[in-house]
Amino acid sequence: MKATNKKSKVIPIAFCLAAAVVATSALILNRMNTESVLHITQDGREIFEVDGEVIDINVNRDFILVSDDGFNEIEIKDGQIRVVNSNCPDKTCVNCGFISKNSFNKIIACIPHGLIIEFR
Ligand SMILES: [Zn+2]
Image (cartoon, rainbow, N blue to C red):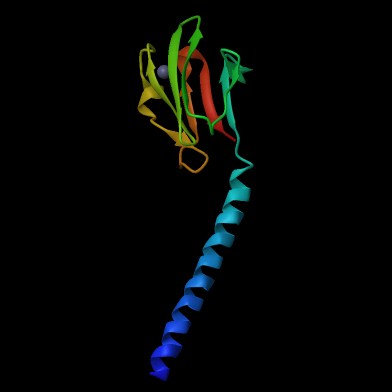
C-alpha cells in the first residue's frame, strides 16, 4: 500500500514539472512572437485601417481593399489572415491561403494590385 501511495504522489509532481516547462516555453515563444507584427502595404503605402476601423490581427473581420487595378477581399480569423478573393489574373495571393505569426510562410503578395501582407 505504501508503495502505491508513493507512486501516486510522484506522478502529479512529474506532471506539474512538465506543465511548468511547457508554460515557460510558451511564454518565451510568446515573447518572440510579439516582435512579429502584421503589415499591409498597397503601392508602398502602409494601410492601418479600413472603413475607420484599425486592422487588428486579433479581431476577426472581412474587408475589401480596392486599388486602381481591382480588389482583394481579405479575411482575418483567429490570428490568421488570407486573401479570400481577388480579380487579379494569377490568383497567387488567394492560393497562398492563411498566414500567421507562426506560419512558415509569413507573406502574401498580390503583385498585380501592388499589395503585400506580411508579418515582420
Ligand atoms: Zn492577387
